[in-house]
Image 1 (tube, protein in one colour):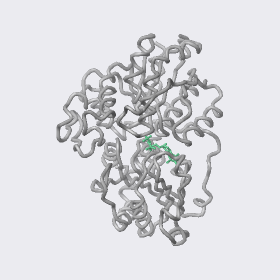
Image 2 (image 1 turned 30 degrees about the horizontal axis):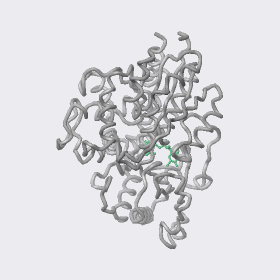
Image 3 (image 1 turned 90 degrees about the horizontal axis):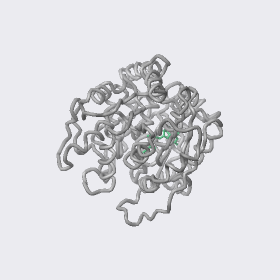
Image 4 (image 1 turned 120 degrees about the vertical axis):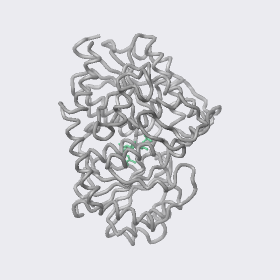
Length: 450
Ligand code: BUP
């Protein structure tokens, strides 16, 4: 391959939380002179992904689009109905088509950057054609530690003591992992085992946010034999144009609004949504709330807010609350001077965006990797995590009174505001060219030129 100008293929998996950081890194590398091809599976699972992908290619004409047509896939034999999980399975089953797809493109590739969910199926295929694989890990370094350590211990255990790190209560690991024969567990173990075969692992984090995890991973304390774990975050979103400023925000006082959003794929029960509404009302704070009641956004369009929130709610809060459904430009919002807090599910992209824009987080993890991420939020001084609040599969509804109290705490805690301001400074320093993450990116490009 061209030694001066590496050609990198990117392969994300399904969901906005995976697609967006892949686009961000692809754009950053293209801007640093790398040749970039972006592998695209279509149709996407969610409408948000479709829009994002087409805006991305329009904004970055130098990035090549490689359409990946999957082989037909019958999900009926798989014990999961999660549409995102099923898509990951489907992509994995087409892994053997990768060599032909890449061979049709020139110049020859220097590396494949793949999503962690696709690692165990694609790393061996890439190795077969002599192509080094790098994993882009889209969650926290803490979660990477758990992934690396998990295959070495038995699932029956109670709590996890990740060497060099901290204790993860069994209740904090994704629920599917409690069951050794769950298809997600099989995939998780296989991906954990294959980490050592990657040439490097790129993580959307930075030194000041996760010093312990980064050190433990790179010093072989979690498991021996890992490739370099390189912090490259917080990733800045690929700039896709003007964004969509919300006129409502402009009229609000500085740092007075709490932004409430639980990500793209975390739906809440109707009952919990109502209590959350009551909580926001009781908090007395201004709020901007993105409501989601369906796992896939294509179905959310049909839901009526009034029916979901209860009669009269929207009218009662209209002077200080804006309730929306559907897609918003979250970064545009977090960056806005009026936002003073973020009630979040702790999806890792959301956490990293909160750090970059200096917004204190009230963490309410709902499933998957989110408790591991919430632990980072609490330890780093980025926010508060109320550990008792309900989690995956738990039916208990957290009451409005309690939510309101915590939201007020989030908005009033001066010490928290100070520690978040410090983290933001560290984040900005990290991504500068001579900062720790800026150097990480340069190190990665350097590895491709060798
Ligand atoms: Br919802 C929503 N607008 O309306 P996470 C999300 N986002 O820009 P998740 C918007 O999507 P996973 C919206 O800024 C972040 O970059 C948000 O990723 C953006 O959570 C991303 O926070 C969401 O990691 O992802 O959606 O649960 O697929 O990883 O579970």
